[in-house]
Image 1 (cartoon, rainbow, N blue to C red):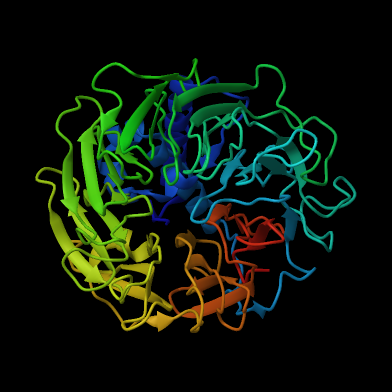
Image 2: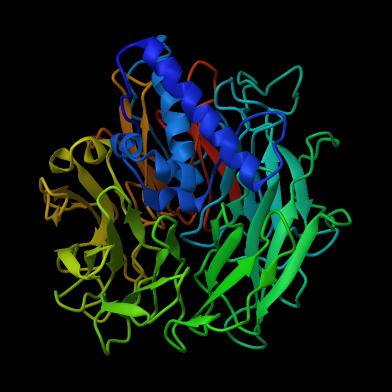
Amino acid sequence: MNFCFATSLQRKSVQIGFVAFLVSGLSAQVSDLRPRVGVPEDWTHHRMKFSSAFLRQHPEIAAREPRAAAQLYREAFAQAQAQMGRVLPAAQTASSDTLSPHRDWSVPLGGGRLGFGQFPAKWNGDPTAAPSCTRDFVVYPVTTPGVTGGQPSIVGLNSLYANSSGSALCGPPTFPFNQPNFLFSYNTNTISNGRITTSPVLSIDGKKVAFVETTPASGTKSAVFHVLTIPPPTGPQQLTATPSSLPPAGALKSVTIAAMSDTRSSPWVDYTSDTAYVGLDDGKLYKITGVFNGTPTVVMTAPWPITINLGSFLASPVLDSTTGNIFLGAGNGRLYTVNVNTPGPVTAIQVGKAGSSTPGIFDSVMFDRTGATVFAVTANDNVMTGAAVVQVSATSPFTVMSRVGIGLGNSGGASINLYDGDFDNNYFNSPSTGHMLICGTGAGDTIPNRYLLNFDASGILQPGSAPVPVATATAATPPVCSPVTEYFNPHLSPPGTDFFFWGVTKNCAGHAAGCVMALTNESTLTTVGVSGGTSGIIIDNDYVTLTGGSSIHFSSEAAPNIAVKLTQQGLQ
């Protein structure tokens, strides 16, 4: 997303100064500042949406929610840089059968990878300057149990702006290896058979990362909340994930949440109160205080943990820090909300089909703060026959505003999971001209199809153009799409290029083993082969004057289990 602030560079400078001051002030409230300003990007930044016009009218929201301030910060500098002429020609179509040597880079993560539908976390050390080979880093948790001296459970990469030709920012002679450096490769496991199956969350100053370690749903169950201090970029270069090491003494703080597994729920951190919220498979929502600036502590005094629905796994929660309302889906197909400041009765709406074996909401909701609405996705809708996106009012009364079908889904007896789509840039300028891109299925089968849905003038979701298949039929398990990530890059082909990125697990656009896809300006499709498709995809900068400075990050979802960086333009 990106939005115009003003036509004069002078006014732009004033706004930039305001936002920089705002971000610095927030950082000072919630954490000790490093000697720079930076911006985190993790899964939470993709699930809370704001329009810039709305934030300018309501600065108190940016003052309360650092994710809003960070969005303003990125957008202000992006627009200023665009006015200074930092643009490239239009994106070109590209296709490749494999991740070939001329692409940015890919590095093995050992025997594991990011969980399907989960996101890495990226720290941009200073968005006002060129990308940094030392300060900027990306964190990948790994689904395989860690072994000290062998397989890591979590890694961090810096020297990101490299490629195999050595032509990128982090190339020879300073960084001679034409690939990223493993800033750290740690075994953080504290429980037997533990692994990280959900997404991490960065602190607002980029010094720490929070995540949940869990055991599988079968066997002895346990979930542990960890906060890891990121090491400084001063150690020797390491070119492989192995061997792993234990974190330095004092670098890892851990607290057991409960004797229960965590299948689907990533932690949501409220930065200003330094509190995390996470759901476990017992159907309870847990509260953890002192996340980044104290000692992580699970609150066990009534009414915490809050019982959402006993026995249902819970998806990742999304918090409206202004109202205190938190939203999350569950395996029983219900969408729940409760106020975390003054917990009262839990309110629920049946989204997935009641009584079905496959009603679940597997992904976190998307929360549009501007329109005060929540979007949930189910593969088996409670009212319509098939899969649907359901739009719900985020304010009282908690009611359904729209249901839009996205194919057969699980209504024919299949068992597939569907994940969130994303809004295009136009949606935040004028809802009636905007769209949501999401992967559903065919009308009469479970083959993934992309749907470009419309909105009316009031921001109510409507059916859109005819679905377009993104994979072909298979006799075995059908292909599945990853979540969709949108990004508007103002420096590509003025007045900018709007991208949608997602992965497909197999049989997509000639790539039998899986692929990553990029849809440019809702018209041109680019595909590159990736084994097993992709994890969730995060954005890395829009700095296009340096090779490798404007990219995306994800992991493959099958062997060889690699972390991947590709350019936004052309997936190079």
